[in-house]
Image (cartoon, rainbow, N blue to C red):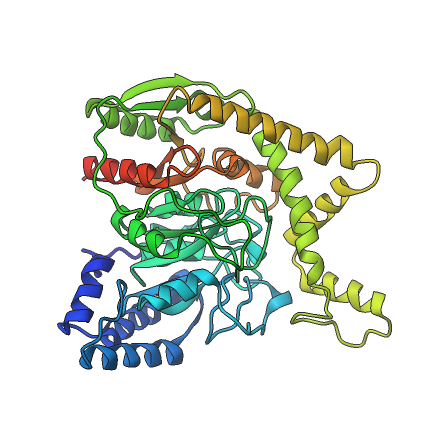
Length: 481
């Protein structure tokens, strides 16, 4: 039987921080509460790879002492959170759920973690994921499969499945994830939480295990848009350690509900075609009707190149990750095959034993499309179509303020249902990869259920319109109460 809390066990992150700063509760009590929930609940769901008990307790104690001495401990004082295990975090290994990094302890932390800690937040655990973030179900984790909080026989999604399940199971008020082609939004949809992928470059990728450098995006999962706003407001902005980071357009990402009057929302027609479950389509259309009834103008739009987006994604991303994973060669990072007599033999055995099947598949695809004789036929052509896709989205956003559609063509599928068919698994990304390819912000907000399984509504906005998109999501959240 799936876990379901009768009521929320956490207040909003702003309320929790206010309670800690005022002395009405302690950081230590919040950390113990999170660790206790993880201990009691995770045995059935496998969302967590490891807990950071010692360091979390030490940080909580120092925060409580600071407050006793009259100091303000920050906007997230004492608030526990969970990081996907591809974020470098002090006090724990960073494995990215891969055997090749098992045992790796980083000498520094990711920028996102540093900024959260500067505001008093406390990382209590590292969440499971598809190994090296390659997948959409956590079934590619080298350690274990995370189960869906609503049905133990189904996947939690991926690659940030552990983060999404942990938030849905109320192990902590929020979690960090990464989204390269839908890896925050899809598990958020499957688990019934809010999952936000910001504009490319808005959050530093420094200290996060790289997958595909031109589409990797750092984001947040939580149970409310308000909590997403606060966390995003803290972690976003330029970072000298990541040359791709950008300035925010506004001083703050926190906003009130959006007045829908006069706002044009484009319904992406290609997201309601063949392959989309009719029940999912019905739930999403009902959600769109709520926006229309409250003043929004709903406009059908077409983006022809979306039909090619998945093919483009699975050329560009494997090419970039095959390059990024070249550094995992047994010489510089954790795992190195024993007994190798030559350098080439060490490379061969380390990568053969250390990488799982999905990593090997993507490395081979990426190496192939970058190889002599195939580069122009595949990689260059894919980048050309990517530019075409960017131009089509830009043109569409001249006509509408936002776009909307489903997150995934189905609800959470059965564990093992797609593992023997990689193409069928890749098709789960068909509605999410475009946002990554064009670098725009996108969010999944719960909008209904089908047979007790959650469905997410995907909202998209132009590049750098993150504040407006979060405001729209907050408005939809209020309409759904």
